[in-house]
Amino acid sequence: MLFKNRIRVHLNRRPMALAVGSLLVCSSLLWPEQLLAQSWPIKPVRFIVPNPAGGTADSLPRMLAEALTQKLGQAVVVENRPGAAGNIGAEFVFKAEPDGSVFLAAPPPALTVNPSLYPKLNHDPTRFESVTVMATVPNALLVHPSLPVNSLKEFLDYVRTNPGKLSYASQGSGSTAHLTAELFKLKTGLQITHVPYKGDAPAVTDLLAGHVQVMFGNVAAGLNHVRNGKLKMLAVTSPVRLPNLPDLPALQEQVPGVVAVTWFGIVAPPQTPSSITLKLSQTVAEILKSPDMARRYAEAGATPVGNSPQEMTAWMREDAERWAQVIKAANIKVD
Image (cartoon, rainbow, N blue to C red; front, side):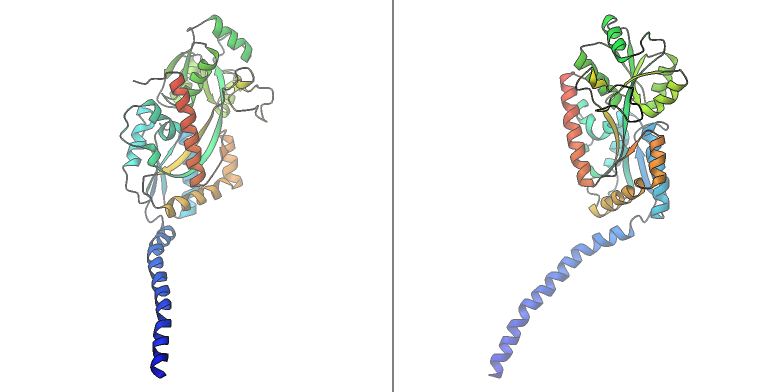
């Protein structure tokens, strides 16, 4: 009888031992990831911006970096690596160590557009680890005051009667300004010559000087020049009219289908641990909800987003598919 009880006790202990062993195995798998999230960042963090200093693509990450430095207790700095429509900065981050010390903070070209524009890239943007979309920025149709037009209808009529006479500026091939203009040309059948620049600042400078006559640019930055009489703003490219500019038509009211909003996102090198990307995403979202950062972004003409990594992945997939269709339909090529 005693022998049977000993066997029963021994047998009953086996499931318990297996359960404890399973817990230990699970803990050994989860613990490093949890520990990594708690300790990150253990060294300075760099936001690589694939655009020149100045302009919205540079200013939004810089505002965020200041707040992240205070929040994380570790220096977060912005480093500009412009060139090749954002590909130079993107490739640098793609090949960086996935340790949470380097991120790419960029507008659409480097994240969703360039794979459809460049037949050969030294990196695969679809393999970046999503963090979050920082903000969206509405754009507007801006023209030099020398043009004898004061409304969207007058502009359309002028371009129609002067084919190929006007030129438009963009921040570079594949930028939202470039693709919006090509979408506009596709929908209207009108001809305007593209003049790409290396960033927003030189493009706006030449627009103000009258070297180019048209640009689909940042609403907030454009308004400053409009108030000074240096530019005219004829329409916005948002889906509907903006609340703060109710008298300014949305472009698609007269040219259906021309809708484009610039956005700015953060991604990490492939294989960066999800615990790091999630922690950064949540921290950015918290900062963007603060009244101070919301005010500063609003002054730059930006609307904070701060979505999750999963939501950003879906966002980028939809954006890539949309612009791929435009690039193919308009037969857009880059040198």
